[in-house]
Length: 178
Length: 178
DNA sequence: GGTGCCATGTAACGAGTTACATGATTGG
DNA sequence: CCAATCATGTAACTCGTTACATGGCACC
Figure 1 (cartoon, rainbow over the protein chains, first blue to last red):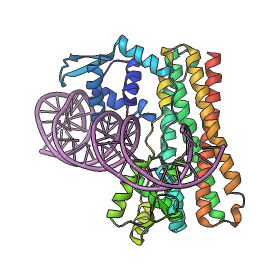
Figure 2 (figure 1 turned 120 degrees about the vertical axis):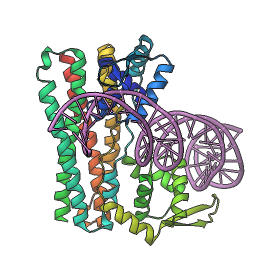
Figure 3 (figure 1 turned 180 degrees about the horizontal axis):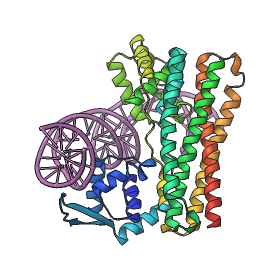
Figure 4 (figure 1 turned 30 degrees about the horizontal axis):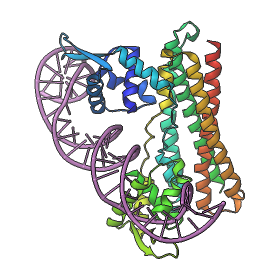
């Protein structure tokens, strides 16, 4: 049920087609809620049926038509309402930790390699975040509230990645001395 | 497919019934891979069918019989193999960040309240982790490798919660000055 | 001429959640 | 006597993933 709210939240920024949304879920929004285009199209149909969003076909030159969705008043009201309700902590699903947990079953270098790979992935993502920070959030004090809230989500991403990196190092040091 | 590996990893520690596993998924293992008992029983049947685990009924006095599972050589080999394969980064699903993202739609105190609630939840969990650290990982240097690897997963949990707490504070400070 | 982007989907499957069900025993 | 714990499940459902499908246009 929460993908729908991520879509609604995204639509408060700009009206979007399914395709546009899919791209945003590969970037900004996708950093805290991932979804494929198939799932998005499905959810859009549901949201339109319940009247939380409204879509209208837009003809384009040299490109396929697209259906652009915007959030309705009902949708915005429902989103507001949902925001006020207590959020649950996210479910933990950390593949790497399952591997570490059973790390004693394999030679140490295999685990070190896993940690290094994990570190590389988080480093990459951190760089993406840093780039976004520098290009879109330069002048925060003059920005709208909407931008400021978006910045907080980016900041969470940055902190999270930094934290992963330092745990990876901590873990590798720990393994090297045992 | 990954719940199965979490179960296997858990069974390398001790043989377990479905019920025991369900409890462990509410504690230690559950901190990085969550699952309900229904899901666990389903998965156990699959794992037994494919011969990765073996179960045997154990009669008990004053309690229902239970079926205790242990990991087979085939299962252990498959787990080892899987550990060596590159782990993906976990999918992001952070309800609280969806709420923050759309935070401009509601009065500021509602968002502050959400952050405070989130902080409370993470604080609670951190305390649980700290307690586990103090009771089970006191004498690390004299512990087995298995214990040391488990400690690394706990350490990840501790760092993660600390990181959430500091972001919550950072976010609330940020919101109080805008 | 091939690759990649734009744009939207269907179909089949697997993973995960929620509700419901049963029945014995232990402890207050 | 009531609640909690032990122990295992079925059924219905929603959520999410993977594979496949289509067709035009732009760019090199």
